[in-house]
Image 1 (cartoon, rainbow, N blue to C red):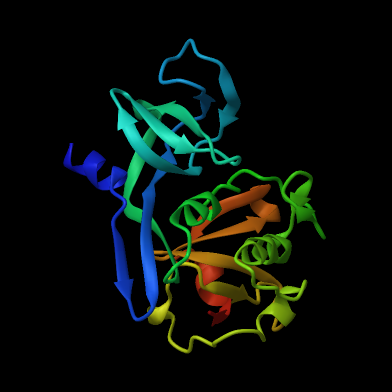
Image 2: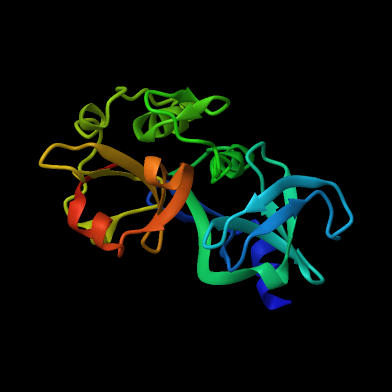
Length: 219
């Protein structure tokens, strides 16, 4: 009950001109599972099969079911037995005065949108830089199209320990040049559109591939 009250809270921490909004709890599927429209197995199926080890954002619990945020901002339901919660509450940090409803709709609503090289539209698919550019455009910030050009815009973060949710991450995965990007969401997690994942998904910076290839971050 205490955890559920925490997840339903509209708590906002105001620090140095920024407001941090708690949005939900990050959870991971432990087996393939469908997402239902209501918290019962006989309700309409919204998504037929979420694979195992896929991250979702839980907004609340009801009995043996968990409500998760869908790509259109609505809620779906997965059985509690199909997931394991992480200890991480998803937050978004934006300048004070930002609309919390808008922030909530931005956060992780694109999970599962398919990867498409050169894509800019969530309806047809997005690549990594198209995804980051799309998110920032919704906050009124225009970024260049390519990841290597985006990495030149904004305030550089010289110590990765100082990362905040919403910061942009840039990776040089295939060589010395920046070729991948994502958005930091806190506690080492980041969200990105990756070809290897088939679309928008969540990974952790402790993964050897991303730990060795992270070369820049911008705010």
